[in-house]
Length: 182
Ligand SMILES: [Zn+2]
Image 1 (cartoon, rainbow, N blue to C red):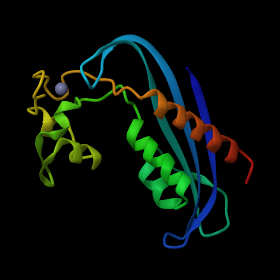
Image 2 (cartoon, rainbow, N blue to C red):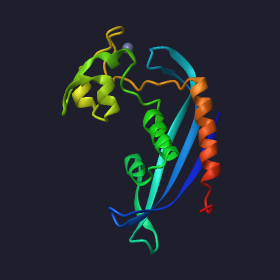
Image 3 (tube, rainbow, N blue to C red):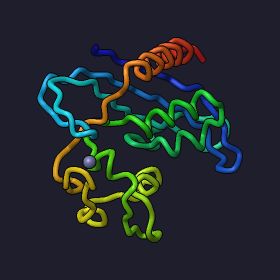
Image 4 (cartoon, rainbow, N blue to C red):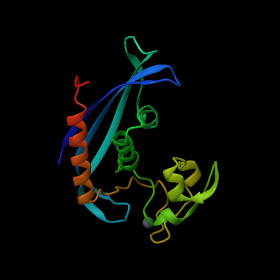
């Protein structure tokens, strides 16, 4: 399935920063037709991939014209601007599935330890906290297959039931936050 969503979040004044923000999130679901290995070391011939990109517009104070204030992988900033649960959920999906076909780590590796800038921790934990990088983790090895971290890009397959919920949620978000609706 190929699909795109355009989510245009309403203006939000953040008193602590004395800035008003407006955010656009574009999401793409794409079916890739190519042979690849999954994070569970299975060979697949096609898979679905999700990608997210944001654009943050802002101005100082409560009134004014918006100017470009950031973009790309700005999900942390978006999570700070909008406390509402559905935006938090959108950011969670972003963290969880963005570029799910560019995983350097396999599933069995998650319980291995890695020395990060914040100390020794499980790969799983380091990944969640965004501390994984090739230099730190290149010697981490899969206990089952001997696969070494970052040797290939693995695909984390989005389970069908999860994908169905994601599509439903994004449909709802795109419908609720249409351009010009606020
Ligand atoms: Zn493995």
